[in-house]
Length: 345
Length: 254
Image (cartoon, rainbow over all chains, first blue to last red; front, side):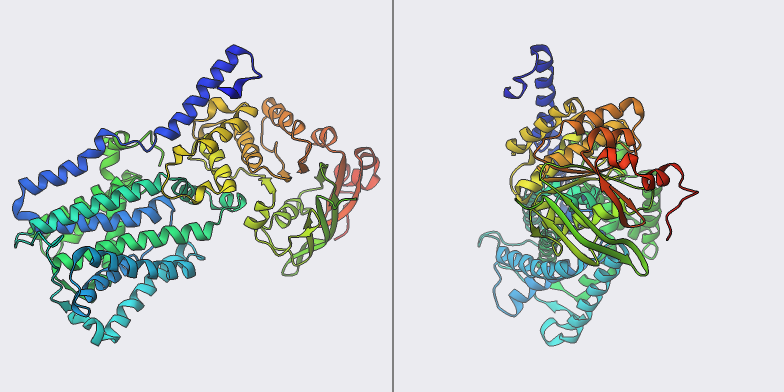
């Protein structure tokens, strides 16, 4: 190594080793680890083991995607929002209206349309609102989403109001694969989309840009002092996050063949936040664990006690927040060690 | 004669009725080793904040190499070559030492604008970061999270980040503050070996450090420049002695 030229050979050798170790840690960080195959194997296994549970499976995959979008801004950039349902909802309506108003039913372009609509909204609202942080940002995102929902009701000729838009029927996937009543095609469709989006998200969080987001989360003052365009970094992250939430919403509209203004509900924003906290924010797989846990629990608890299922979720959430700082299962089973290098984000 | 590296003209800052900088004038030639001293609350850190743009001035001008930067944002001033250290560590505590430096370089070079490349693939950034760490004898801590380092070495990381920004003007806000005396020589060695092309303004309470390092000293009291001179002039100045030795008896008015 050329950097130790002026040093005595033994000390130089040691320094070369230290340098290689330091660089190695950064270089290896984003390598795929075998354990990262587990969630995907589990998703495939579920497809074969529970063929009659595909509707739940679908919803779970969509919520994983939604939670994944939140992880970029919450887990990596450290922005807490209570209005993420806005982008989910815009994606859903973007995809739905493309079919019902424009008669274009090819599914992939529906996803692109949903992502675009959400991204534009994410860019504009992010540019305006990301000047604020903490409680102010929380309230602003919350109220923007409520206003969006209300304007959906106002323009009911276009959006169908609270009655929603029925008949969101997509054309066969790639012009070939039609959808069965059990939702098997939908499931594989969602899984494929999740895989592609996950790959993109993973690249982004391990990119220099992703590191800068972590820097902003860790110490925004220092990032400012480093000359980082903090506001623009956050706007870009917010826009990407909105686009991914939009894709999740578009999948939701397409696989349900129906969408109502309920997608903008505060419950949606809160639920996705709860999922991410359950699974742990800031390591991507928290979205998988949290959303799957939430959806399965919701399903089982609702069967046991249709009126009080949220009680169980609440109890679990309290337990997680009080006893495990970084999410449930990762800490309990120590799987975070398997899935990423050391314990750093 | 070329323009001063840093020039401050009649700089004022008030928070409501409280004036924390009242008409400060200061000029640092290129390569200066200038110390800023004064009692607590004299406005030393405020002046650094005004120079970096972390705090906006109420009136007056800040010029870098003869160009006015008073209206520029902190980020824009940083891009023009101003770097600082903080009195209280401002580090990415949960990131490794290497990543701390990586971010400084990545933001300077624009590498952090890249979304699609692996952070580990930026070998130029990593190599430069390691060079900086090596020159400050921090390589052995490269992989450790900053929070695990002893405080003295954390202060070194603070300086390493500022140096990784390749500044023309470096503002050191009490770089040895809180460092146990057994480790403070590490910091002092680094400071005394800084590149002579960098213009340095240092805030320090420890007079030994100030007299060893600075060629000129400005004394700040109650938001205004009390006096400026060489270390010998300053140490002989009765008003400075009054502030440092007999603060209670001869406290400045206001």
